[in-house]
Structures are given as C-alpha cells and as structure tokens.
Length: 398
Image (cartoon, rainbow, N blue to C red; front, side, top):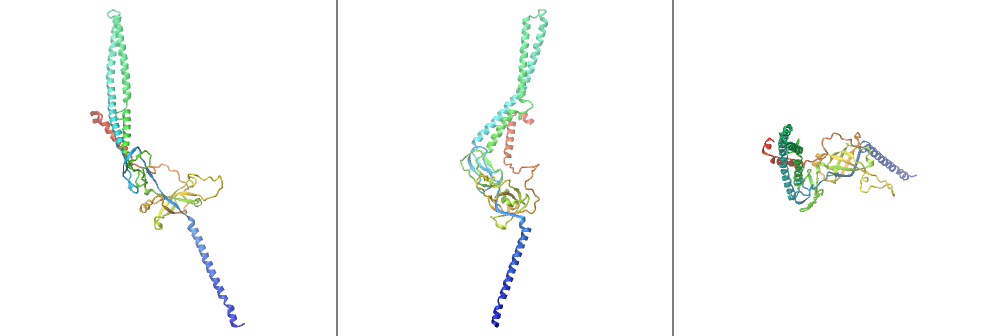
C-alpha cells in the first residue's frame, strides 16, 4: 500500500471524534438544562399557581330614587368624582312641599287639640267635685225628711221628691266619673310631645320631611359616576336605576383557576398581580381572600346537564377572590373588567380553605351615613313645631 492510500484511510478518525465530542456536549447541556428545570420546579415552580383568566371586580352602587318625581336637574355625569352625600339629581319638589306644609299644620293643630284634652281633665275634676257636693247635699236632705215624715212635718210626696233629686245627683256623679276616666285615659302618663295623637302627627310630618328631602337624590358613597341613564324631564319611579357609582378604592381581583390548581391553595396566601393596563412594570401585592363556593358553570343561567345526552369532560374553573393593597390601588388606579395576571404562592398551606365564622363584628362590611342627617333634621323640626304650639308657661318650663 502506498503512503497516499495510508493517509486517506486515516482521515475519517478526526471527524468521528469531533462528532462524539459534540454529542457529549449536547447531552451535557441537555442534562444540565433538565437538572436546572427540575431544581427550578422543585424549589420554585411547584409552589406557584398562576392564571391570566383574572379580571378586576368592584362594588357598583346603583343610584335610585326613593320617591316619585320629575327630574329638573342633573348634577353629575359619567366619569365625575362625587362624594358621599353630594346631590346628583333633583326632582320637582312642589308636590312634596305642599304635603310637607300640610303635615306641619296638622301637627300644630294636633298639639292644640291635645292641650284641650289636658284641660278637659282639669275641668272634669272640677265637675266631679261639684257633683260630689250635690250628692252629699241630696243625701242630707233625704235623711232629714225621713225623720220628719213620721211627725207629719214633711209629706211623703216631698220625701219622694228628695229621693228623686238624690238619684239624679248620683247618676250625674257617675256620668262625671266616667267622663273624667275617659279624659284621663287619653293623657295619663304622657306629656304633650309623647301623647299618641301627637306622635302620629309627628310621624306624618317626619315622612313628609323625608319625601321633601328625597327630591334631592344624593350619593350614598364616594366614587366615580358611570352609566348615567337619567334625562331631564323624565318621570322616575322608586327603584329605577338613574346612574351608578363605582368606588375604585374598593376593587378586588377575581381569578378563575382551574380546579386542578386549587389543591394547595389556601385563604391568606400571598399573591403577585400584574395588570395588562400597566404591564409588568407595575406590581400589586395581594392575598387570597376567599375561594368560590362553586364553578362558573354551576351558577350560570343555564347550568350544564351532564346526566343527559353525550358527555365530554371539561376542566372547570373556580373563582378566587384576591384583595389588593389599597395604597397600591390608589397609586395605580384600576377599572372594572380590566385583565389581570395572577400568581399565587402556595408554599404556606396553614390557612383555611373555607372562611371561619366571624363573631362579635363591631361594624358592617359596608355602610353609609349619607341619609342620617335627613332624619335628624326632621326630629329637630318636630320638636320646634311642638314647642311653638305649647302655652307660654309650658315653653318656659321646657
């Protein structure tokens, strides 16, 4: 064999060694990647459950009239910020004003009538005393005449007449006692302000005052106006939605996790949330507030009927409520319905799956005092009307 043939036969050896080294490097890289992925999964990934099937939810407060009326002014429009107690819509107050004036006059007249009841008790006591004197005198007259009949000084006819006078006096006394009892029953253990007739008239005035105040429809909470449907001149009825208010500081996220993701999820676990509106640069810190009591299909308008017809298994989703840090929500406001990405850290599984019973709650979850001033003003007006219709001496004593 020549030297050229020998060199040509040896050339494949270096190519085979290079290929083997490349395959070894590739295998090593794949092995390292697999080990890295396994380590990442065991140390990090398996403690996280995430979904982008999540949306912003919040309270949507409907503004509805409490009485019938015609809209004469609208003071708020979509997107405006309003404060609790601020007037949003005004209704025509003329009918309510007439009813209010009638209620004031009715209360004033009732107070004066009740004063007459107290006076009738006093006059009834005086009449009763006079009747008692008349009965006593009639009895003495009968007693004297009975002693004189035997001697003939007084005739039997005169004695019979005296007895008739006594019977009439006793009947008048009984009638006076009954009348006094009826008068006392109307005023016993009461003052003018607490007398039932006055209380009934005061209730009518309170209702008329509230109806007059409700001509101005106020915001029960602070927030932003949305979905204004009311128009000028519209005749509105109680319960008809005029607009809504959204308090954006009270929003939360509803994340719809697959049922297979809820195995290790517990109330109180930390959550990292990102909004598509702001991207990954803005992070919200939250916590799992509650896990839904049913899947979305269970509460749908037409629930699935899996026991009839052909059946295909579909992985269900359960809504999970996530509370956000209020300070972060103020810094980066959200809107209802925005898409969110949610990542729940499930490493700490000490929390409960279902909420426990809360006892001794000092305050309700949501409340408003926007209407409290209306009733306080009505009570002040009632007290003032009663005082103005009392006699001068009674006012001074009060």
